[in-house]
Amino acid sequence: MFHFMRRGPRAFASTLALSVVALSTAVASPVFAAGKTLTAVLHSDLRIIDPIFTTAYITRDHGYMVYDTLVATDSNFKVQPQMADWKISDDKLTYTFTLRDGLKWHDGAPVTAEDCVASLKRWAAVDGMGQKLMDFTASIEATDAKTITLKLKEPYGLVLDSIGKPSSRVAFMMPKRLAETPADKQIPEQIGSGPFKFVQGEFQPGVKAVYVKNTDYVPRKEPASWTSGGKVVKVDRVEWITMPDSQTAVNALQSGDIDFMENLPFDMLPVLEANKELKIEVLNKFGFQTLGRMNFLHPPFDNVKVRRAALLAMNQKDVLDALVGNAKYQKICGAFFVCDTPLATDVGSETLVKGNGMAQAKKALAESGYDGTPIVIMAPGDVTTLKAQPIVAAQLLREAGFKVDLQATDWQTVVSRRASQKPPKEGGWNMFFTNWVAADVSNPIANLSISGLGKKGWFGWAEDTKIEQLKDAFVRTASVEEQKKIAADIQKQAYEQVIYIPLGQYLIPSGWRKSLNGVLDGPATPVFWNVDKTE
Image (cartoon, rainbow, N blue to C red):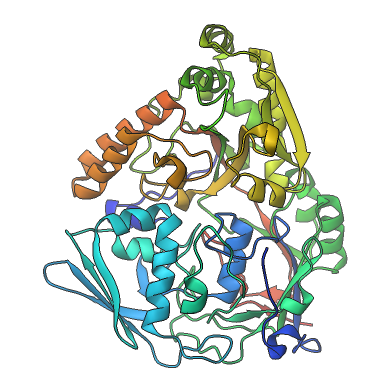
């Protein structure tokens, strides 16, 4: 079994966490086609390229290529300056961010404080931590071209942790004209100030995405650490190649046709580990939580009794054995906020972790008023870490007495379709499965899935006033013991209302050719700065 690093309360709080048009001619052409090229197969195809529009990790990974952040988190869970430094007033009510010199957008325009204010507002409109930060914010404005001033209504200890969180909706900075796009619409251009430029002219969803070195980027002088420090680009070009079939990708890695593979299939690890030309390593040491999410807007999961029957039918061991099947990389855990952390508790998780709820599930479903409405479950077949969950869940739900419509699809279709609030018969859905990195779910404010904001919240749109009140109480107390108590109360309510179903934790190894060096670890990997390639 694996174990997450134990952390103190302050460090713990810091552990947080296709509409496109052509860019300039310089960006749209393969400028560095003859230079040093790194090829990678990531966990998913890239289709949605607006990192604020979706929480999908592949889009977050794209965001880190193109965009930068005001502040960032290092490997000691400490927030560090990135695009900006900051000062905090003595009364803890005013945060003043000052942009560093020489920041330029990819189109050559200077980065301004107005751009960053607009970017923060767009991010905060849809991100869980951003929304909570804005609840405590009196104003945020550009007081001059390089200065962003954020004033609070009352002291709030998670300002820097929110703006600097490494995942999932990251507070990426973009030009004001793009940041003024409503958060529920995708931006029309990919213009950032980050270490790579997106090559729009070579973007082929389902085939590849291409990035070239941003020669105007001035890295920070500190060493690279997680998402902070000097983002020094050592290759000229990075190509993300889409290979939905994991055997094909493994063959390409072994033959040298690709340099890097993010998610290695567990059943092929013995062969890969024996290849002396490859390096195998878990880059995200904190792992993932996998979960099932129901749609609260439409029958039958608008009925809490039906949701509880579905929860009782679920069994973490069955899911993890099908998903991972290797005790070294999986862990049964009923804690909403991740096992082996200060907020971990088993409250409400008994049947999930023991797998003994099926008889109760059948009885609960029979008493719930369920009318046989088919459960539409989206089942992506192109992502190694998302194939097993819907298949196992469908089997367990059918055993409990549910009718299930398991719809085969790909992950990017799930990412698009899960945003639809239409009924299942009109292209909507009843249930989907996803994975969060541990940093994204390790406390009630970071954990977007625990939202009770209804249609303003995360996909599934659970509405729960009690959870939101408890979250406010959580951020207002400085007592670790009180935080633990409140987190346990939130988990109890989340299980009672079946806000989502945590299905266990797992680690996943990555692999790369030994011709690569400088590959960084962290909770938002992979990143491709600091990586060099010997020919």
